[in-house]
Image (cartoon, rainbow, N blue to C red; front, side):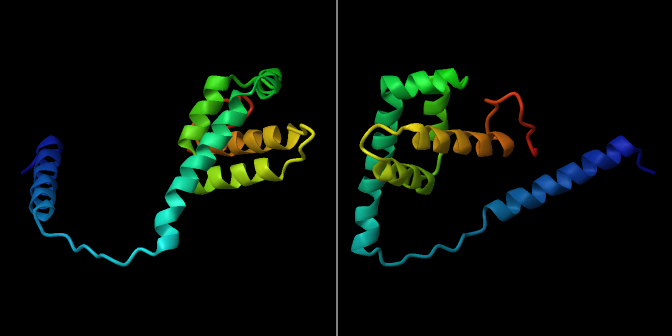
Amino acid sequence: MYFPMQLFKRLTASALIASTTLLGMPMAASAGMVSSAESVASPSQTDARAKVNAVLAREDVRAEMASRGLSPAQAQDRVKAMTDDEVATLSGRIDQAPAGGDILGVVFTVFIVLLITDILGLTKVFPFTRSVR
């Protein structure tokens, strides 16, 4: 008769043996053609990330973020955590902003992105949110 601890050890050992055995199995790999558009798309994504970082480095943007309780370091960390598609979307919004300096839309977009990642539990910037995790 097994005691609960012995049963736990036996099940754990069995799971480890099975996972180690399956780890050695060959994995299937697939390859495909990469189009010119796909291969050229990656430098533009790094350009978009650089553009967003440049906007966040501006003094007026930093002052606006500070007035809303967000430090520049937190904003930079959030940009680093964003996917390439999110950065491209944010960069596109920066391009569409009026040239007169209406940065409120960009700050609002950054705020919304930060709020969503806060709610998803990826970071904890705002004290008024509760994580879903």
